Each structure stands twice: as C-alpha cells, then as structure tokens.
Amino acid sequence: MKEYRVNIGEYADDIPNDVAGVYLQLTGRGIKSYEKGDKTVYLIGSFDNFEDAEKLKKEMQEMGIKGAKVVTYVNDKETDSK
Image (cartoon, helix red, strand yellow):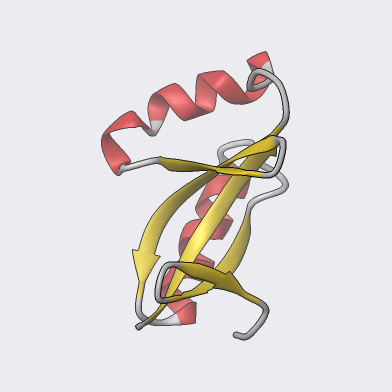
C-alpha cells in the first residue's frame, strides 16, 4: 500500500527548543516516530494522495517547521518514488 506522510524532523539528539513547542501543539494530531540509524524521525499524517500531504506540509511550514517534507511509503517502508 502506498501512502504519503509528512516528515517534520530527524534528530540525533533532543528536539530543538524552537521546534519542541510546535510539536507540543501537534500532540493530538498523531505524531509518530521511529529510529533510523542514529536519528529519530518524526512524521505526521498519512494520506493516499500526494496533494493532501502537500497541504499538510505547507501547514507545518507555516507553523515554523521549515524543513517539513512529503515522503512516500510503500508497505511502511520509505521510498524515493512519488
């Protein structure tokens, strides 16, 4: 199954203070995290179309998460395809 999620950060250490405040505002929206090498990856949203994920990415950027990006997952594994 192909789905689109929004990556809102990848950190090897603690989440920076300026971003942590935004994450607290998002707690009811289902932030998920997983370990990837020496970093923790934070994701929000799960969509079956790119356009909805892109809208959420823009919302995250407006909230101050400038590095937010849409990522594609197939069978729960990140891929490079769109």
